[in-house]
Amino acid sequence: MRDGFPDDAPAMALLPWYDRHARALPWRVGPEARLAGLRPDPYRVWLSEIMLQQTTVAAVRDYFHRFTARWPTVAALAAAEDAVVMAEWAGLGYYARARNLLKCARVVVADHGGRFPETEAGLLTLPGIGPYTAAAIASIAFDRPAAVMDGNVERVLARVFAVQTPLPAAKTDLKALAARLTPKVRPGCYAQAVMDLGATICTPRNPACGLCPVMGLCRARRLGIAADLPRKTPKPEKPTRAGIVYLAQRRDGAVLLETRPDRGLLGGMLGWPGSDWTETPPPESPPIAAQWHDPGREVRHTFTHFHLRLSLRLAWVDMDATPDRGQFHPRATFRPASLPTVMRKAWDLAEATMRQD
Image (cartoon, rainbow, N blue to C red; front, top):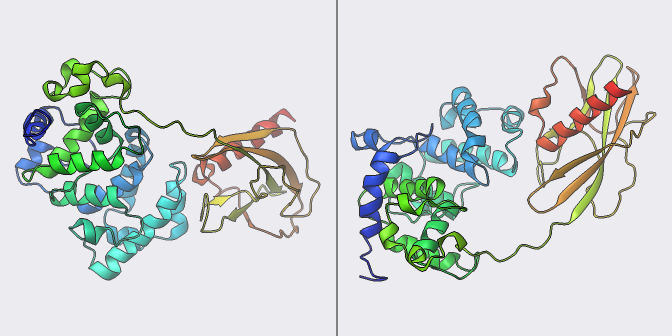
């Protein structure tokens, strides 16, 4: 016994609570079905975990339904065209995930016969899978006793053990605590129980301690500091970068788009030609000779590490105009929804500007 309770105490309290209160999620096999012998599909677990990285459950649900309806197996996804998958991913953000999604699916099919490895070590050899995702898949899909650590788990453990070292410095200690508490029996259900607890009761603000199944074990609750944990090291202020985005339409309504380089932000995504994004105003770099109009409008967007301000340029061009970059796409087949969010903002702003003009 350490910290005033045996290591199996959290699991003994959480698993009965999870059996009654587990969230119904489209990628999850619930506790009742699991106890009846239904096993999770590793493909669906993997897909959901990739989508959920830095993204909320609410934002992911519709994307998950669309992806699994269109590509119900890892083999189907592996055979999909890159551009089609990237277009379906548009709006979900963190586009390197979509590129790695395809790479991983193809490796699983080509090198593993369409079956995901069952161990953390095996999963870590796949593209786009890091320690958290490997542990989550091993635990949830294969019921391996892996220590799953996401933001919800960190918060629960920081409060139960009153860990006052700020994140990210506390991550190593919290990971060790998670490994110590993970049971050998029903480890997949336990991992999901801790995540559900953090998402529904042990929330970042105003935790519902009176409803918590582990409140009797929680040191932070006894000390009256639960709402203050976990502590976090202040992040530096985000810099602001500037750029120019060029929206050209041909007389027949076709729009000029380009596929961004595979590496870097929005890699492999379709978007409007533009300048580099720099901390000083960039020089003009139009993708086609035209009478470009500056309407004095600006697209504003925030990425993880910086704010972006894009100045808008608009032009109509003749049918025989030849771009230096990009290709014209017929207006009838152009789907603004297939653009990443910042590029869709530019389109919406351009349309609003043209209506006013």
